[in-house]
Image (tube, rainbow, N blue to C red; front, side):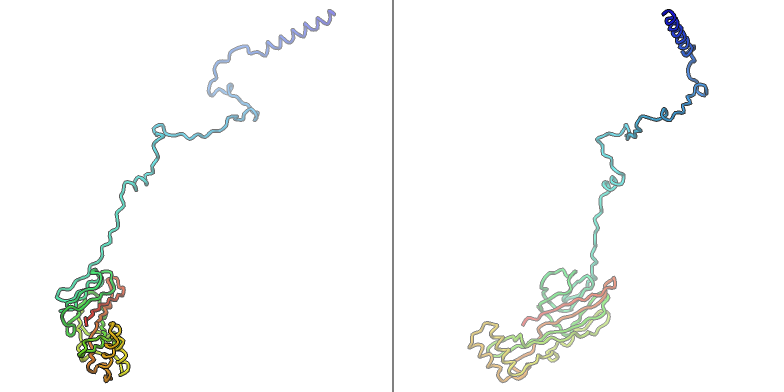
Length: 279
């Protein structure tokens, strides 16, 4: 019993002695930079791991207000600069001086001298391809057509119609009519002389005895005449065999001119003017 107690005491004494030797005996002082004795030289990879998540915060400027939207420099420039509206200025034709019928298109201006005529439709012809007039005074045959611009050709054609003139009155026969082909006019310096419109030079519509009588009857019906009146008109031409034989007369119904040329960009254009002669 005493021997066992003695061993326990010796073991306790040895333990106390060892513990006193492991405890630090003095203060080493602060760590000095560059002192190799104070550098930790841990080699265990498990002890060297970074256990903190690598965060990447978005840092904004302290002078930037949250309520102020960010505007790109290019957007601000566009907003500050007003757009300029494109203005298209239409080219004005060179007009001709003188008395007569004048038609002013964009590509050319046309003057038919010594003629008084009333325009049918819109007065602005800048974008039009043609114009129709009604003769009010003057003479066409022997006058001139003057044009401006780069004109390559001016052509003319006309239409004639037959009239019946007798003691019953005057009756236009619309079905007895003819229209000529286009004929190039002679001229120079953009001036062309009107010819071929005198009564002796006019083309005559074709017709024989039966066709003339039928045409006169249809014209009378178109004017809502009575059956008796229609019969009288038909009887008045029963001996007529040609459209230029009395009481039939060939008269000018309308004249047309076509102006062909090139605009300032070299593009071809064609304009037409027609004058109707009242019956």
